Length: 233
Image 1 (cartoon, rainbow, N blue to C red):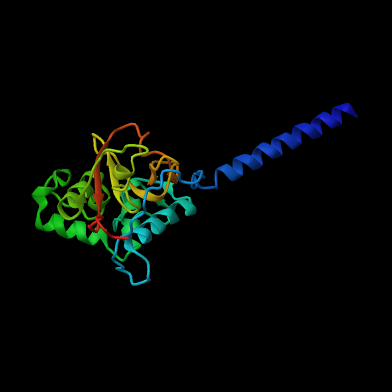
Image 2: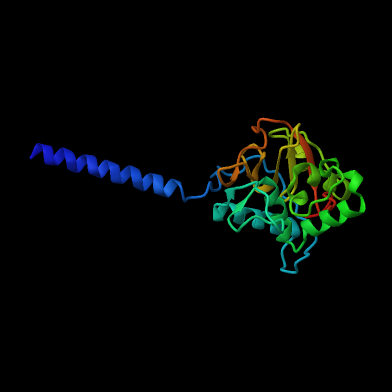
């Protein structure tokens, strides 16, 4: 009888562990729950509404990027004909075009067109444009946003409202050198005002506290499409 009991307990533990593993393998790395923001950093929003849905572009970008988190998009930096990875797969750069797609902006078309006109501006292209991958490379996105976006501070000072106000939802942040990772600034912040980052570094897309803890430094901070943060609200 005791032997049967031990076998039943063992089987229960096996099923329990299997269930936990099954769920972990399918639940996306979701949004980190945070206490209420105690730093009182104002959230400014872009005045534009490119997709005419009644919402500011900056918050639409965040919503589109966050959807990748909710879907549990798996990291995949592979090469694909047509340029876009399969649904549910993508790399860090894919978060950017997805965010911009949320406001009706076609980043692939814009980058491909600029590379065709100014190939020499993009060293990563090496003189041989490839629309299947160029718009998904971090260095190419950096060149594009440096040319057509607004470059902002790369310094983050926790608790400093004046500094943190410059870090707004929808802003694009790049880490390096080398230029190897890129993400979108969230509209959620830590209690000290430092914003979360929406990105995909694997195994899945995530929204978490990595702006100051990423292994490499913040190399670039862009706002695109550019908008003034002076008095917008």
